[in-house]
Length: 292
Image 1 (cartoon, rainbow, N blue to C red):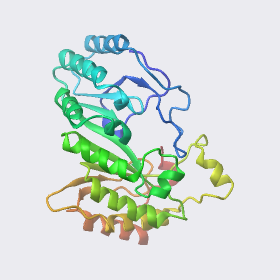
Image 2 (cartoon, one colour; image 1 turned 120 degrees about the vertical axis):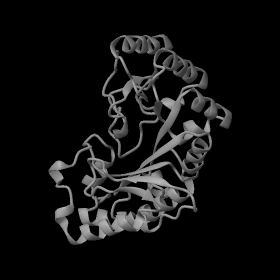
Image 3 (cartoon, rainbow, N blue to C red; image 1 turned 30 degrees about the horizontal axis):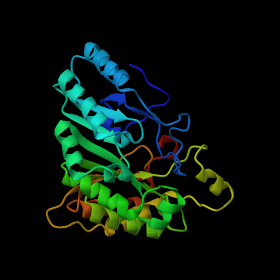
Image 4 (cartoon, rainbow, N blue to C red; image 1 turned 90 degrees about the horizontal axis):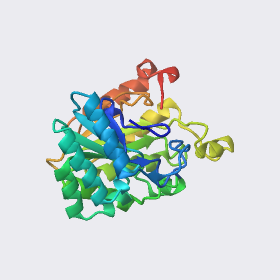
């Protein structure tokens, strides 16, 4: 099995077989991100990918899930993705789900028929980093995707039967735009209606470009209680249509407060936890326990 550079995967893919099909991220300019900085984006040769799959089949007796890395593996053509997925189905018939990172623009470049073909071939979930619903924050962080593209992209994946797991980052608007970030992220969840929404908290590697803004006083990080204010405001503004459920999680290692539940059914319970935590700081994860 050949890996190049640091390999990243979503927390929910912790027990999955990680298969690199691309190296790095084709955009790799988000100002909050330090991932993939050691790599120049390129696409792996199909024969090398298939060789890795054959090697893993000889080594593992059972593989329940497979995750296709790196940063936006969904940028591959459908022809190449289907060749990989067909090999997975032949070599790992027991595999229950294939997951993949994808940017909104990757999804939008594919037709509804192409997305349905990927679903039928085994793609069960796509992980999309929205980070914020606020157009100003998206622009400042060089996300290279608009609010509309993110919403339409997620809806297109969901309509094709591919579950979307969408990530948002608390604190990404800084002190200047925390309210706009909270409300716009909530309305984005309401409009895109993803199967899963995850709320992380901003933690920065020194290599992340936005750290320069912090050093120059142009960007102020939120304090823990301000993060809770933002979380409270976000949850208050999510309005999903009747019959729609979104699994919500803020249990990443970066978060001060762990929440999990279904929106909208468990919103009041989660809000109650947030409000208790605002009165009792002992409920918050200590700084030394937080991690990227």
